[in-house]
Structure formats: C-alpha cells, structure tokens
Length: 114
Image 1 (cartoon, one colour):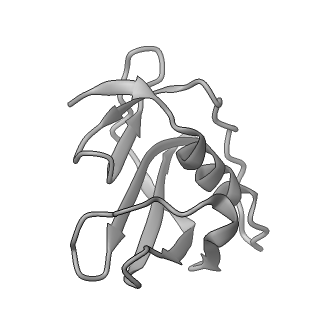
Image 2: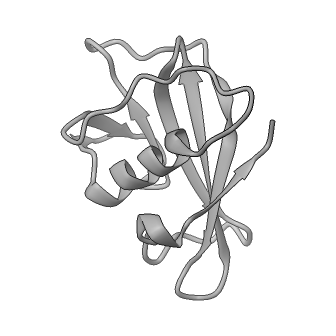
C-alpha cells in the first residue's frame, strides 16, 4: 500500500459527491486538497488517514457518482464515511476492468441512494 497526496481529480470528485444536495444528509467534514491518502487497490480505492489512524467503523455515504471511461464503460465512485469524515473512495467499472482515465469532476453524475 502506497501513500501519496490526493490527486486534484480525486479531490474534486469527493467534493462533488459531498456537496450534492440530499434530504437526509448528515454533515461531512471537508477534506483537504493536500491530504495524504493510502492506495489500497492501486488507484481504484484510496483510504484517508487521520492522525496516522485509519478509521474502521465506516458506512457507505448515500450519494454515488457515475461517469463513463474513455472505453465507454461506466465508472462508479462510492464514498465511505466514519464519524462525519471521509474514510475511503472506491471506484470501479461495470466490467471490472481498470480505469483508463479518471473523468473530470464535471463529467460525474451524482445519484442520491438514500
């Protein structure tokens, strides 16, 4: 597992998801554009560390985002949160292949799953 700074595209995607207006939204602490993350499964899943600690009690956030990769396959982005903080961003394609190019924030469509 490699540590690195969050990329601008990942940061903008997470901001788009947590800023999406939903009825039963609970407050989420904003992430920082210079946060250090840990890659879990390559670039498809990243985990946030807070004070060196990885939060374990997490749940799926009620908003999902989806977009198309350059090969036409749908890419899904799911957020996981614990205690009001983003803990993980998981991205995957419908056909389970690797993401070729991460879409820009404007290309993602948010869906309220609540």
